[in-house]
Amino acid sequence: MDPLATTRNVYQRLAKFTGPPVPAMRAWDGTTWGDADAHATIVLRHPAALRSLFLPPNDLAAGEAYIFDDVDIEGDIVAALEWGARLAPMARRPLAAARVLRAVRRLPNPPRQAGARPTFRGRLHSPWRDRQAVSHHYDTGNDFFRQFLDPDLVYSCAYFLDPSEPLEAAQRRKLDVVCRKLELAPGMRFLDVGCGWGSLVIHAAATYGVDAVGITLSHEQAELARERVAEAGLSDRVTIRLADYRHLDEQFDAIASIGMVEHVGDRRLGVYFDRLFRLLTPGGQLLNHGITNRNRPSRWLPRRRRPTFINTYVFPDGELLAVERIVRRAEEAGFELRDSESLRWSYARTLRHWVDNLEANRAAAVAAANEATYRIWRIYMAGSAVAFEGAAINVYQMLLSRPERPWRYGRRGLLAADDA
Image (cartoon, rainbow, N blue to C red; front, side, top):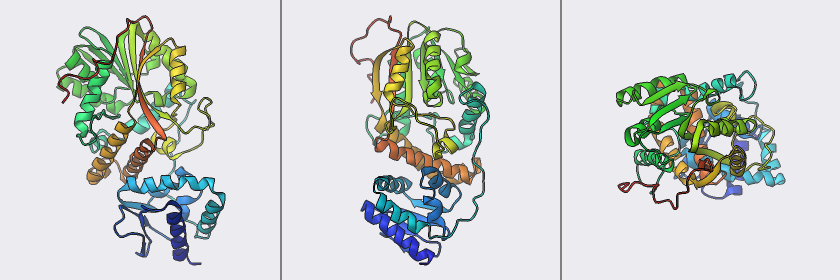
């Protein structure tokens, strides 16, 4: 069977397995299969493209097939990846999977892919290696991040009350909700662990009158955050440091950690919460905002690490843990969980906005970085949107208090009266 006929056969088998909606598929010679009105089209660049996509059968191979342009995705990439997620149950149908893989193996060997996988040196989650991993992700370039983030450069889940509202409004609300949950007030010392480009510390100081410290391991983030603090006229109340949380030895009344716990690692989770507990004054509070994994084979015991697309190209050394594991480690450090809120659908909406923005600014994004980086981030954010919508992963804001803090009844203080 020639490559074109084999490719058509594989596509038809996959479409039959999932049922509609199915993306269209266009072969290297222009032949197209599927609905002409499909939301997405998978473009095969050469006769071995499907072999690159499916062998070996894991997400790293599939991601590299897209990064190195064996395949392209035109139209709605989220819709294409939703279809990919609907193929996952085929792994539990060995006969159906074997037929597809047998056909794929009849395709020619793909051309050698250009480019090497990122590598990192040092002991896992040591300060030195963590700096490398953070730099790989966050030093992609400030101009690159500007192509998809909101004007305040908030690189974390927004807080939507209505899915139709603009990203900027939902991101401003998120910053304010974090401050309200922590009950920030003038004169308090506030620490933001992993402060990004300074959006939260700027908002906290300007709106709630706190003295704020933001720390990051990214040189590019720290430089721009300091510029933004100065432009806001807050240099006397906000300090941005290039520092690791493990090296701090001072006291704060409140701490926020937004999107940081994913970088800590299971083996260092106890160190993380122990250190933050010691940094808090008596009665202080920590707002821990992080992504959790719902699909672990064992939700209590960490599995053996294997290369995936995300931990190879996007978040090196990142680990998503079960929510109960995080709570357990926090309580072992002395914290009491006072409030927990899932923002799963808010993150899905945030990611869809980011994908739309990145695609709309493709030329500028490629100019700020390169084509491979654009592709990595496009497919990473689209795939993450699918994972949140399908409940494979979640994101929680946990309000963790030192237990001697006076009790506050109800949630009346979480939203501003003029939120609308």
